[in-house]
Image 1 (cartoon, rainbow, N blue to C red):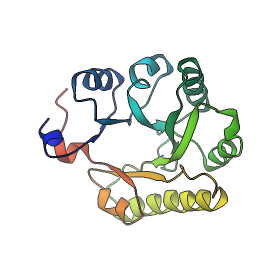
Image 2: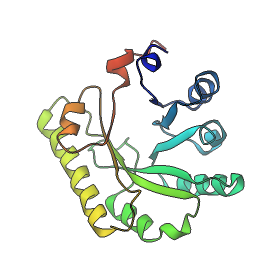
Image 3: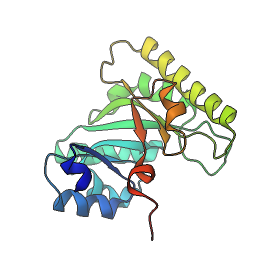
Length: 187
């Protein structure tokens, strides 16, 4: 509420239950972004409240969000999570998969593709983080040039508390800096 009182109106949450609880308890003019890994059995906790789902990382999840949107007559704004880091445990689409999805976007009538989300490799090496963000930003620019008719495709969500300055150098439109503002989670 302190951040809200200071004028902040866009908040992100990475846990479905917490998003649902906060959205129901806090002022209605807050714009909620869902940031975390989303399981299909948790859609009902997220989609009624989220103004943007930043972490769509599989075709199955995208199809289920589209199905939920159809059932509720609601178009869901999403970012496609691009996998570029070296870690095998990271989620996300390969560049070719993103291209395929955007070429057949008409198959997803209840999805609005708003851009890309990505995370750099988990490392303290600034050069590696910079290279990862450059790759995501270059691909984002390529997609914007390839699909100029997609006016909603304008968000580039890269950067977190430890690397947001580097992300801004690559024209990030959204940075996720919760830890730097609110501190570490204690659970």
